[in-house]
Structure formats: C-alpha cells, structure tokens
Length: 206
Length: 244
Image 1 (cartoon, chains in turn blue, yellow):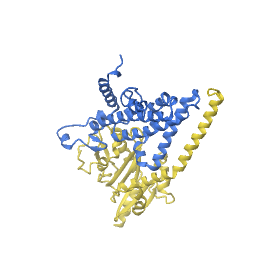
Image 2 (cartoon, one colour):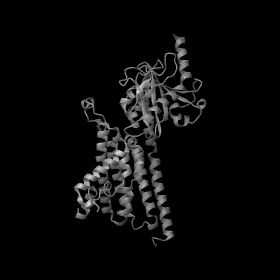
Image 3 (cartoon, helix red, strand yellow):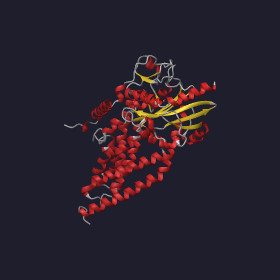
Image 4 (cartoon, chains in turn orange, cyan):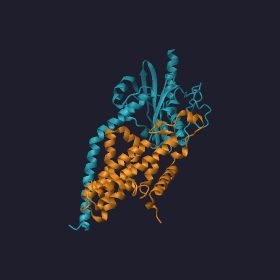
C-alpha cells in the first residue's frame, strides 16, 4: 500500500478525525453513545454503508449530472441503508431490534454525505473505498470512547455487564444519571477534543 | 451527451429511480417471508416467557403449540367470539383505536404441568412511542405469574430499561385485584416504601429513576387493558364457585 493510500486510513484517526476535527456526525455521537454495544454495532453499520456508498459514487462519478449530485448521493445512501435494514431484519433479527431506529439514522449522518461530496466524487474507486473505511473507523473510535465513559459512569456497566462491584455501591457510590443524557455526551466529546488538541498542536487554530 | 444538459439530467434521474426501485422492491419481497416468520416466532417467545418457559426463537413454535391450550377472543360483555383467529388476526395497535365495545380482547390460556395461566397482551404509551408486552396471571385470577415488556423507542439506559429482567421480576407475585375483586392494578411508583419488593400485596413496584413517564405508561397500560377482562373473569369466578 502506497504512502498516500496509508494516510487515507490514518488521517481520520487523528489529524482529520470526522468528529473531533471535521465536526461531522455529532448528532449520532450524542444519540447512541449511552451504551457501548449500540455504539459498536452502529460503527460497524456506518462502516459498511460508507465503504459501499463511496465505492458506488466513485464508480458513477463521471456519469452523475452535476446539478443533481446531492440527490444522487442521498438516494444511494438511503437505498443502502434500506437494504442493510431489510437484510438484518430477515437474518439477524435480534441485532436489528437492538438498533431499531439507529439504522435509519445512518442516512442523516453527515460524515457519509460529507465524504461522498468531498472525496468520492473526485477520486478513484480503491482510494474512495479506503477513505470510507478510514473515516468510519475514526468515527467509530470516538463513538466507542464516548460510549465507554457514558456506560461506565452512567450505569456502572460495560457492554451490559456490571463492572463496578457491589461493595463500591455499598460504600455510597452512585451512578451518575446525568451521563445518560445527551449534554454529557457533548461534554465528553469536548474533553476528547481538548485532550487531542493539547497533544496535537497543529490542530489549534490561531 | 453533455453531462449538464437538462435531457441528460432527466434521463439519469429516471434510470436511477427505476434501478433503485427494482432492487429495493425485490429485496423487500424476497425477504418478507423470513421477516414475518421472525416476528411471529418472537411473539410466541414473548408469550411463553411470561409463564416461565424460556426458549430461543427456533423452538418457540413447538412449545407454543404444546403449552398454549386455548386462544380466546374475549368480547366487552365477557362472552367469547369463537370465529376469530386470535394469534394472527387481533392486532392491539388496531384494536386500541376502536371503542372498547367494538374491540376483541385476546386472551391466551396456558397449561403447564396442569397449572393454568391466563396471558393478556398489553399495549400503551411510553415517553416517545408505544410500549407493549404481555402479563400472565395465575389461576386465582389475581396473582401475576410474569410479565414481558418491549418498546418502540424509549430512551436507552432509562425508559428502555423496562425490558430488563430485574425490572420484570419486580412484578412476579404482585396482586392485581383487592380482596373484593376490584381492579387496582400494579403501580410503578416513585414513592414506593418497599424497594426490596418483599410486600407482594401493596400493588406497587419500585420505579426506574429517570424513566417516570415510561413507568407511568406501564402502570396505565396494565390497568387499562385488564379492565376489559373483568366481565370474563367474573364469569370464570362464578363458574368456579358453582363447581365447588
């Protein structure tokens, strides 16, 4: 893999992270980070949709009429999401129930459209595929990090299993219910951005 | 052809819509049978779980046929309409839109090791959307054997917790009627004095913090649904007295 292709995968992890640097996909980062499991499955689903839609748009990039390109992107993403939803409902019913409305929400994820518009329309199929995967991983990484702290501090669980032992509760520890509400997701994302920028100085705007 | 001409744009859009429509319609149609099967078996699984029969989806149908001995469409006056296919044709979503005197009230009667249980589907409103489930009652027509709840879109970590085992277990052995057979229901209470749930006659279970409205929804749907079965239960009770 060439150097430029490798940066397509590594850039979204840090220098160009979709959530903390591009500030895309914030809404879903707030909505589905209450529990680690939902965040995990959401990340995987977004990865599938992003990789596939980037590839399709990149293949069609010389055919798509410029004036309706946003509509075309939307139709492609929406159809892929509908397909994923139908297949899950038939073959992985339990997971599909777990995700319920979140699957549909992938359509509204700004990262998907953002990458189609900014990258897939102007680049080859293989590079677009890598860009989709890279951005989905960068997005999923933040999602999982936020969900980790929210589930741990909010419910005392991880992936649904209790991790804070009973004696800690007996000593007077309480789960912080505020962690389960959206504002704390925003604050957690803010703290992550703060830490990232204090380590990676070139992200700081003048 | 010029990519920015009107004709090309129209042609592209038309072809795109056709291709997508065909792909989606084909997928939806070809997966429909499997999807319906999943929903049907899940319903059996839920009904069975309220009477303590835990099974996976594959085994649900066999056990359902084995344990559920009657499926009744109870009418508002307490009679039974034998012409209705209860499991497939009564959908609470639609029944709830009718006035009570036109509704059919589904009732499943389970017989497990010669213990009889009455299972009633329930449905109501949570905070964001519908909540629903099943409640099963022992042969005394008063004590709860078990419950199962599900929801369409309650908040994960708060209202959605009603589906958890620790919440459902609080309902077991709670009473629905007082000693004069008046329906009291089971209140999901924020001011419950019995957080360990050792008092099974108080008609209360402890609420979930941060899920007040979902909890009130549970209280309301149990009471609202049960109310309509009172005439039928009264018939059962008087039959029983007559038999004794």
